[in-house]
Length: 497
Image (tube, rainbow, N blue to C red; front, side):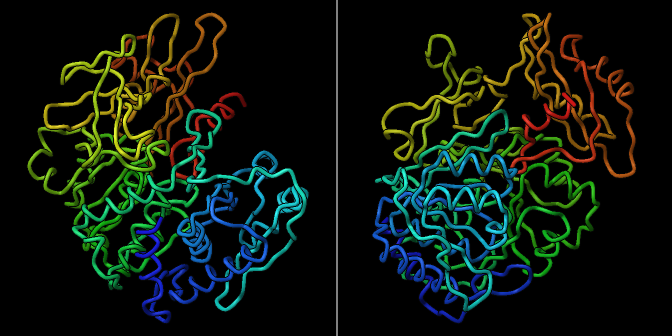
């Protein structure tokens, strides 16, 4: 990561006393971040943990963990992500399976008894990342003679997928591909990556978890640009809106569920007055939701499309495209990013389909796969002649009910047309006679009520009989992954209960 390393290192050492990251309304300096990075480097040197080594980290959103992440990636080591929101038994199982020679975490995670015992039992070098300025990284457990999987030459991140539809998978992301994506992002900000590093007064709000690829991408884009950051532990309407009021950014980002929460909380328009654009991704965006947000606040909602497997985004809206194509391409996730090719193919034959027809999406870019071959996704899509992309659903998420195919997104859209519904999610439940059947959980808006029988009657007027969910469950909150997608495995547990 020679180019990205020189940019990040140059930015972080320009003015050690300058403000870098605000966390819980307290500013942390660039010098504090580089102290963490330098402290880790000393420990790694003493233990012969060189470039290409796998380093597991419990990636909680704190400035100090952010510094550890940056230091590891720019030194050509591989971060193996551990999710702090995992239940204890799953985190322990993940630690045992990883066989990483180094494990780092914040103090609050080391206080989790079963996790600490599992980490020590693995004989890994265990490091506690401080939370107070001036404190040093602590060695909790010396490196032992364990059965480690150490080598990850050329891999920057082993990232867990979100686990929206099943057990999360760990995807190896090449360091050069991650670097290329961060450098290419400068084009969208009209920055020249070859200019001298400098610090900027603008503040970016970082609220996506570091255990999600979007959180890491946002962190590196922010720091490489020399911008200050307001870091939130997760998306919550109150802290998010307060951060906008404090720092007056022109652009922010949150998943579509965040948009719904803001609308449902009826946040006053003046509190978002600084925003010129609201970016969203990680989950499908209902165009009616985007329209409702624009009508309420006058702020364009620009969607992007990507995935962990793609090392981030591959398509999205620019402000200029929104002005010229917003109405004609309504519902699109935007245009393919520069350097990314997309095509739609027949699921059975693999033959490319004409513009406007739906099929499976395939992608090709220098930083995807081997950089030459087409990478097939599980997304059902269509494209037009100007490279605008529509994501219509997931091929691997279709529900087959007695031979009838149901696309869950179609049912979700119908449920969310009900004026009392804030959000819905549709999953497949096993059925001994039909194979599988749809079930739906839903949230209602503040001050509203909606009994399942009333919603079922509403849906019978809008869906074919086989599309109507056999079970409807009203919840106070949806179980969610770190990226705020609805966790379908956890939702299935609620239905089973």
